[in-house]
Length: 236
Ligand SMILES: C[S@@+](CC[C@H](N)C(=O)[O-])C[C@H]1O[C@@H](n2cnc3c(N)ncnc32)[C@H](O)[C@@H]1O
Image (cartoon, rainbow, N blue to C red):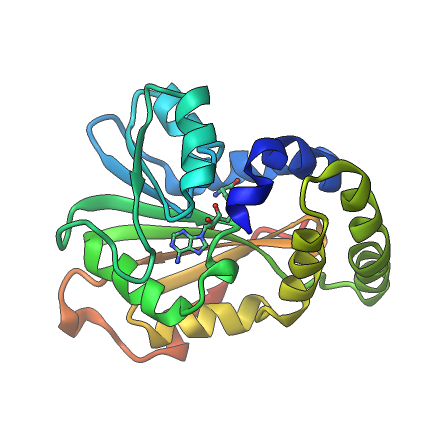
């Protein structure tokens, strides 16, 4: 499916998100807070749009995805970025090899997300961070109703006119509805071994950015739900 949408993926994204993706991506980059000399894995990187800001800042970023169609479009656009074909549930990287791992609008698409979260933990250095951007659940009930109307009715119609594979966007809407909300995703992270978990809502919770850390030692973990805290920053 991703191979098929690859050629127009970024254009359709901008269109369907009404230009919001750029702002969401800036928040992710700030949360990753990569410093020169650090190594970042952008997982489910698609065409590399989510990896670009790190490359632009001179950070050593690896863009990994299992869709060769997406990787080809990415490599053509940004030959300077290191694109690697790999499955999130069986990563082709050594243990403890990245200072930060990030995944934007990808985890929801992975068939076995818990397996992917375990793999991300394995390849992250102790004390390193994970930043996830994913569609989530609008907090305000009225905003939520309006959003769901858009998601289930308008979005597939716009995609029908703009995308090379409109069915992929029906899948998009359905998969967003089926995805865990902010607190449940935070609980998943705790369950899968991450700690100091926090999240921030964007655009009223349409998107949430979760950040979590790999324990420095297995003993530093203090019990799952105690580690989940809501970001103080209000949703915007
Ligand atoms: C919606 S795109 C996101 C691309 C990019 N991160 C962005 O922000 O534009 C989701 C990507 O997840 C990838 N993906 C899904 N399952 C995967 C897996 N098991 N391993 C690696 N990539 C996967 C797809 O190939 C697709 O490129």
